Length: 134
Ligand SMILES: [Zn+2]
Image (tube, rainbow, N blue to C red; front, side, top):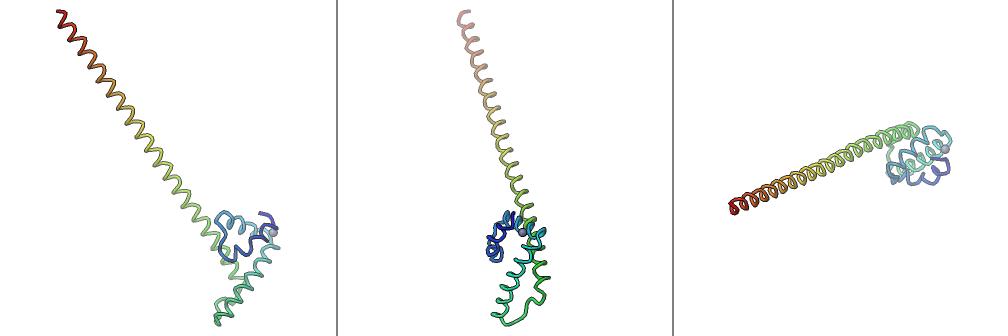
């Protein structure tokens, strides 16, 4: 993610409305760009400060530490959700694979059985014809 993209996503970030993929890129950019980090931290401080004024009680006294903690927690959450999603995707894939395999085996044995019946019937007809000739 580039600096100008961060600018367009700051409000969504502070609103918690970024999707996981965007959030991860956003946080990764902040990690390595002091300029954007400073900008976002300033807005974070402003918004949280205004919220606190509304509530008339102090919840955050160290905005810098709170901002850092929030970023770290969000990164952890995003990575965790990604792992769960990857696991779920694999399980679904495995399930589909097993269903296809079972379907294939079922079809195969069905055809085999049908073929055996057909051969048995043919042999029976030949046998009966031989009897009638005799
Ligand atoms: Zn930047």
